[in-house]
Image (cartoon, rainbow, N blue to C red; front, side, top):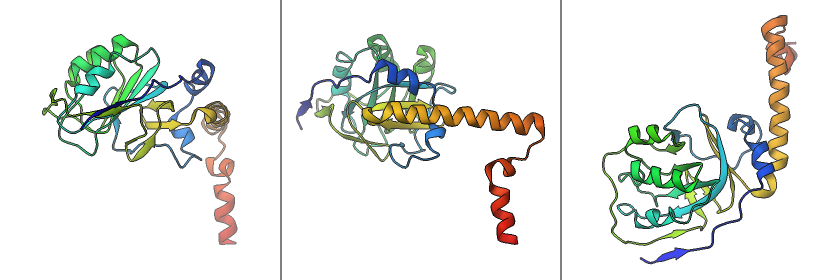
Length: 222
């Protein structure tokens, strides 16, 4: 194999990321069908929400040579997306890579496979999503790979330069041109939801009445 390294993508506008940081992935899940990574990819550190610009990398099973090189390219605000090319045995991401990524300014990472060194990741307080933990690690075998190409992560296509939103419910990627409109729609939805919850909690209003579910059921029974 050989290496393919494309230029680093344009970063998502700061104003758009500020909007997106107020959004829950589960809110977008009310209407979006695309962009969600597999629910098998879970956070290693709970109760974190991060947003950033996707920097993509694809590396083969036992090798992490190119991942180590990527650490020298990362910029503040980047979010690393690692395609493991279907490998689920070798952990390419551990304590050392975590320290390097955080020092470079990366805001988080997703590995479509296992990680290792959970305690060190927790000590670094680095937001990390993956498919679990493995003690079997990669080595520097110099097998090749690609940086900033379209990748498959969590059964989803991720493009370099996509916006990433990751929280305790999961991970979603958005094309840059959709970030502002989708984020604002989600913020408005969350505001209405909080008002509805307050009515149920303090005013005795029934959720089924507010959502319209009760009217649908009664109409069917009539």
